[in-house]
Length: 81
Length: 214
Ligand SMILES: [Zn+2]
Image (cartoon, rainbow over all chains, first blue to last red):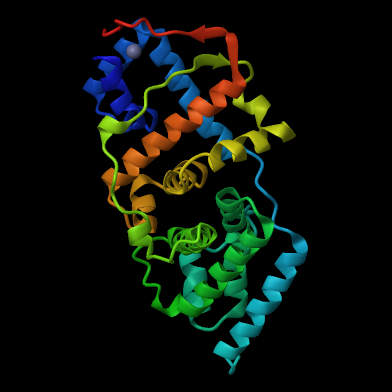
């Protein structure tokens, strides 16, 4: 496997959906190619940062207003309730 | 989220009850997804007023279209799809482009040959667990996202930040799974490049040997 081929299969490897034979080849390449190993580590860390990063908190004042608007709309839609 | 004494009802049950006119069920669904929708919109748009508009539009649309929701996709995918569409609309408007359908805005255009190669390769100085605790890191993450074309940004946010599967991301954006995968690869590589330039240890930068082919 060449670096380019590894790059093309990076998603499947990182997501754990690559087939076992290719996975083994992938790992053999990384064992002998430090840059590819580090790129894979970096990608995993990038995903973790975005997944676990602090979210932008929903402003409470806006939230209350939105809920009030939604309740009003709801009552127009279901006047019987 | 749930306790043994009051298990949270699954989305599908709340949807059924909301369709039957139960306001509490609709509010429970809104409570469950409003933070995710707002967070996604902020990461797409970086502007609180626009993110609030997207959030409000999304849940109004959920209210109005709930009876048409058949449960072919999960409720979460459906909500994020509506939010994505609303965010893209604002981006188009900002750019002065006519509003187009989501399908057109996400037309297939990439192939594997155009994938850029990693350039700055280095171990990071700190672990992600350490980094997420730091306030300035959110700014760094948002800056890197802003440099990413929105069609890649949206795929990355839905798949990697929101945790949808490739299939669900494809459903949400009405793209083929192949297209989602290639955009995701592009997004991941560009974000990696950007973040590594900021977070990588220059002392440990690796340079590929020019004839490295094994
Ligand atoms: Zn390599």
